[in-house]
Image (cartoon, rainbow, N blue to C red):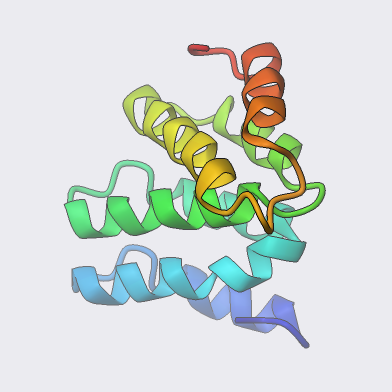
Length: 129
């Protein structure tokens, strides 16, 4: 989503983050993932709007997307800094757990090892670890 011309696409996506249909919210969240793998700063403010979504399916997708972004080159620091600014600590703790797990599940593709990710998180995530 938004690979070539992100501004109008991200503006369009923002309108659907609070759509009454949970599946639309979930699809928008998931659609932002690929943009976030190279430009996390573009989509993290949009994802933040979903941090208190009442639907488990949307929250689970949000956690998945955060994990998928964080293991890419140069993205862990951006994601952790953003999570430090979110108010839903229960969700951000789950996101950190997912990020650590992803660094193991995708160890062949991850820029950092799981141990390096844990070390970074323990130094920069202000809630736990």
